[in-house]
Length: 352
Image (cartoon, rainbow, N blue to C red; front, side, top):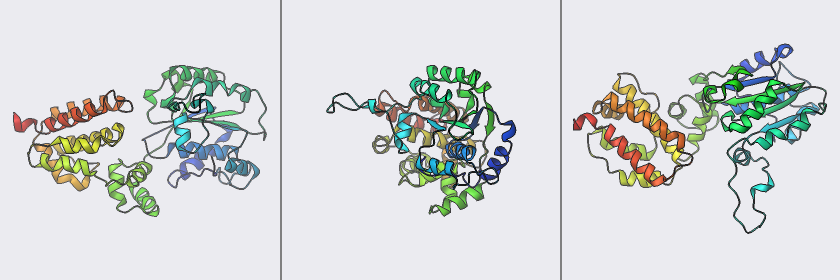
C-alpha cells in the first residue's frame, strides 16, 4: 500500500462498529459481497486500522509511526497475498522469476493464482515477534484465486492459527471456496451501498450520468467507476447495434458486432451479455429492467419476440461461457457462437 488505506464512505459506519469489538476479534475474517463494492479497499483499510497505534473511533489515524510505515509500503507486520497479475495491476512488486533466465527470452505470463510459495513464505514471519507489539495482519484477495494446493495450505494455517495474527480475506462468493476453509473464518458480509450515496460518490469522481453507470454495474459503485472510465457508454455501442434490429424483429448482421467484440477481452463482453439477458428475462416477466434502463423499451420489445424458456436457457449457457472466458480456446469461435445463440434466442417465437 503506497497510501494509508481509507474506508470508502459507505463502509465507514460498519467498519467503525466492527473494529470496535477487537477484544473478541476472530483470527480470520472472510469479507464477502457483490463484485465492485470495495471489498479489497475494505480489508486493506481494516489492516491499516488494526496496525494503527492511535486509532480514532476504531479507524486508522494516518499519522502515527505505524501509519507512516504503511504509507511507505514497508510495515513489517503486514503481508499482502494476491496473484502476481493483480500485484502488477496495482503497482506492487512481482517475483523476478517471472522473466526467463535469458533476457531476450519472452517473459512468462504473470500468475493469476495465489501460489503455494506465497503461503510458505509466511512461516518465518509467523515465528517472529511482531515488530510493534500489536497485531500481525495478512491480507488475502481475491480468495477465488487460491488453487487447490494453496487453499489447503491456508486451511492448515487457519486450523492452528499463529498468535497475534489476523487474516483478512476478500471473496465475491464464499460458496465457490473450499467449505472447510470457509468454516475456519468468521464471515462479514458487505451490503450493497445505497444508490443515492453511490451516485453522489460517482459524481464526486467526475462521472456524468452516474445513475446510468450504477445501473449498468448492478449497483456496484467501483465497477460503475471502472465502466465509466473505460471509454464505452453505459450501454455499449455494440450492444445497441445488437438490440436495434432485435427490437424490430429484424435479422441481425452479427459480422460487424463480432468485429467489435474480438477487440475486447471475452470476459468483458460475456458479462455484458449476461446482464442483457437478465434484463430480457425481467422484461419478459413483466418486471422493470435492472441494468440498461435507457434501453428499456427496446429490451421489452425484444423480450416479446422470445420465449422465457429460451431466454433462460441462453442465460445458463452464457454462465457456462463466463466460467472459461478468461482463457477461451478459440476467441473468434466463442464470439460468433455467442452472438448467433443470442440472436436465435431473441427471435424464438418469431420463428415458431
